[in-house]
Length: 340
Ligand SMILES: [Zn+2]
Image (cartoon, rainbow, N blue to C red; front, side):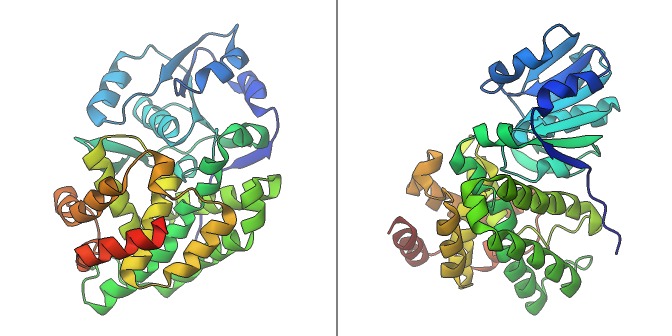
């Protein structure tokens, strides 16, 4: 099985060094709250800046049309800036450098950009960066809760594997994605590797950053490596996130909301939820709704809306999100379990 992973470089002071690699004029895609921190590293060079405010295809296409001519694209930020940089590099056929400023999501290591079409998630495009630069000190400036919670985008393999086995058992597997022991084993080993490094991830030490980023690196490229099969790494926990995002129209830290999804879905699945919760607690994952500015009413609405979102999206695979009913009794029990 051939596995292709993106180039990644770990180190320090990488943002200020980046400029020497960039042919001018270049484009930096970042976020309004991050840019003031990095702006100085790019002064006295010809460049344009785009601060991301939308992932809607309509807006991104307008951006691609209206942007001045540039030679290179740099993505500097969390998942949204990384995805928009990817989209522009793809549509304009430009070289790309990615500099994630937090650990939250596998986006820096994946070929396709996660965008929204009328609020519904779509993965589109193809962009392989020259290199992904992971600067230890930059990563550590992100909130601890965000960095630690990025384990969610790996822990989702846990619930996804239950979903895949269930679909196989129920005869509901998509014909192109029959249950595959090889990919379940590979992704489970990645998940176990991160759980084994729980203390280093908790501390966001250099070792913890490498453990988590290397796992996200594997996960990001796996969609392509498996022949665009999402099942080894994504299941009902992501459907919960998409459903909630669709209802609330607000951005989330990906790892954080997916972590909550993993707990809600492992409980629904009867899939030893205590095991994964104990690991999250050891790492210090901020999975409580309040930690992401939502209420339990939002969470319950997101859970109830999953089947409708699943039908609306039309491109999601068969998981617990549609197989198991969301009853009042489940909602009360899972809330009592997590809200303690
Ligand atoms: Zn994800």
